Amino acid sequence: MFLEMTLRRNPRLIETAVKLHRAGEIAPNTYLIDVDAIRANVRLLVQAARDQQLTLYMMTKQLGRNPDLARIIAEAGIERAVAVDPWEALTLGRAGIQIGNVGHLVQVPSRMIPEILALEPEVVTVFSLDKAREISEAAVRLGKRQALLLKVVGPLDTIYEGQLGGVAEAELLPTAAAIMRLPGVAVAGVTSFPCFLYDAAEGRVKPTENAATVLRGAELLRRELGLTLEQINTPSANMASTFPLLRRLGATHAEPGHAITGTTPLHACQDQPELPAMVYVSEISHIYQDKAYAVGGGFYRRSQVKEAMVGTDFMTMTGNRLEAEEIAPESIDYYGTLRSGGRKVRVGDTAIYAFRTQIFVTRSEVALVEGVQRGSPRISGIYDSQGKKLR
Image (tube, rainbow, N blue to C red; front, side):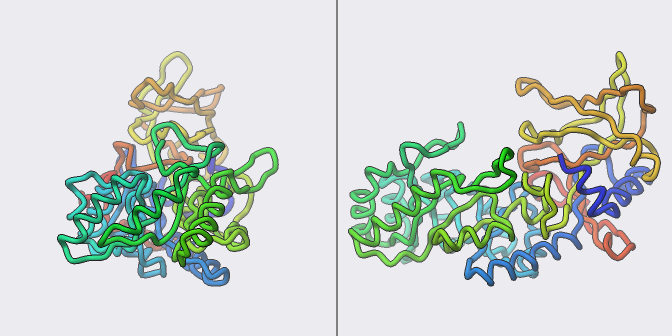
């Protein structure tokens, strides 16, 4: 999906990946992340957000919720994180990363609420009055006042399977009014997901119905309950080129994730300010019936993987690209399948991919490499897919 763009815009990263694998410094099934490019992308995002008066939370799940990389992102200007689930909040919070938003997409489990509130998140997203009540009770016991975001869901909204839930738009007003009567909590704003999506037919990012629902919800709360909302949080496809659109619609907060690595769907087909900053490194395990099989463990089912470069040196590999086959969702990705198509491929060859991923749901290792853009690459650490440093 991103191989052609990465070859053109960040060839040094691919060349580094090949050299490190051939030297045995990284194993197959490793995501290699260009820290130089990450820093540059974050600084660019911060300036673009400042121009549009937006506040940013970093999303790290696609990077393997890596605390060391989160610290680098924070130092570059995005100081707070959005945690996709409470375990990510704990991983980052215990490492000293400030938590911006937690509870969206995964609600904080009842018995984990005190531990999460102790991290002092800026906001906690809730899907129901019941969850708000639990947070209220915990906040009172801890002597805190916790700001809440309400995930509001309209009848025509896009909600992915496995992510269903939220306050129905028709119930938003009574739910918010009831939450306002609870001690220890305050309604700070509204959110949903996905608020923006890439339209391949039009070649641009467009607001979804979810965005309209969030804006209607915000206006309703202001008009009927007199709330001064601190946040209208509109995640998905948040990147420098879409920030003006967010601002025009009235958003206050964005949560860039794939923009940090230059791997949104828009980045695959159009030059964007953010550089591609991540590749997946594997090697050919075996060849069977005219197909080559690369060691797996990191193939994400929504990756839209198209091809891989295969060989033993960068220059040769640029002209030796094999078509990839999608892995059936019911299968474990022990291997990635490549169609040889008459091209040269041997057992032990390096295979370099660049595709959309979510590292935290893989079995991969993650290698951070400094100095790629300066021509002096050095691995600063190798981690598992949950951010634990291995070596």
